[in-house]
Image (tube, rainbow, N blue to C red; front, side, top):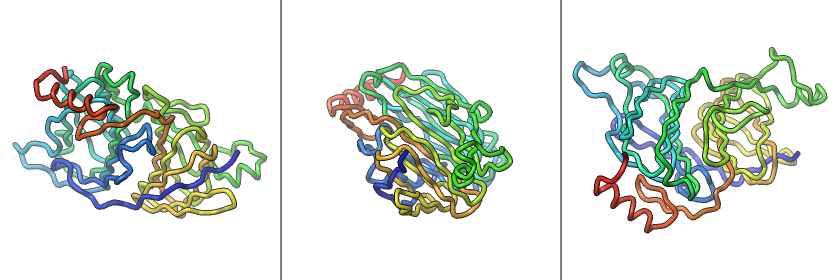
Length: 311
């Protein structure tokens, strides 16, 4: 088994506001909506930020009604709460550790806000949202919604790769674990995540609690993207070459190995690992619509403007 090497590191980008509730880093920058990231399209990350309690009668902060077609949005709450409502009747609140996986498909109109309860009490808010492309054959599928609660997301212990090697490749005692992998989508060491996907997708929330070196098996034929939410890491390549990735930066890797080796530089490091089988299909994206051709984008806009959308 060989180690994956780094193709490019994208530095942390300046933040901007989405509505009045989400101050986000556009993580993928100018790589967004390119086949290089497939099946992922876009990634916004809201760093921890304190919001004061809202006075009585004030509407929660967030983003009002807007349309989507042709892809999925995946929202992960780390701190605070996000409330969702859409035109097909789905409504819900995700709390820390929860995930909202919305399939826009043929079209949906939705809104996203800080929850009423969180807005009243205030506090620290942190979340991310990923856009996942749909295969051409599924772009006009019926809209759907998966509310994935924290307690339904399995967590797998991870151990220091050097200790595992010393132990002849056998698993170490649970007391020697150096962190956990929460498997949101895909699978890790035989443990499957709860998310249902239209193409092979991996999404892991990795927490490393000690300075250590960890090996994460990852399908060699998949794109693999490594985002550092908190802390600093080195990605170890063949020949002990190291590529440093700091907070809010992201590493794009080559499809040349089946092991992602990460060396954490400090305790309490958090990393998101995402990827999947590239769709190898044309991407036409404009605003809230992602299709395969510009004619389909024009039709999506016509459908939305005519009211033939999101039901």
